[in-house]
Image (cartoon, helix red, strand yellow):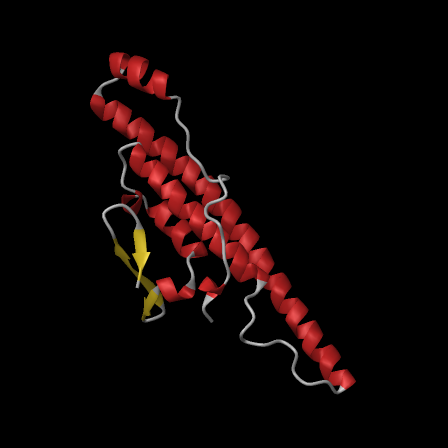
Length: 158
């Protein structure tokens, strides 16, 4: 199923990353070594990303389970009523739409990480986050495990 059939305006803005830039540029550079600043920034971004990923993973899991239960309920109801199969493969599920929006948010979040001088593809939890919400046609699998290419900044499927 191709989830790109519907229009989404872009990222939602819920997955932005804002570091207090004046502090970071002025005080952090004055009091911390470059190595310490880089480590602090990486740890901070990793922890924020971990939390975003946990929330997204939970929301997607619950949505998929709920959608599956509803589909089973509909099929049983249609079977009892003697109706033809009602769920078409051409329809884009609400879960797929939600994942696409989260995917766009994840890409924008990755751009924000890049703006801080970090590479999202080098942050394992960002790649897990990306993989959780990326459309299936953006990912390859090999032996049941996702195989992802990395652009200079992002995890890229395919």
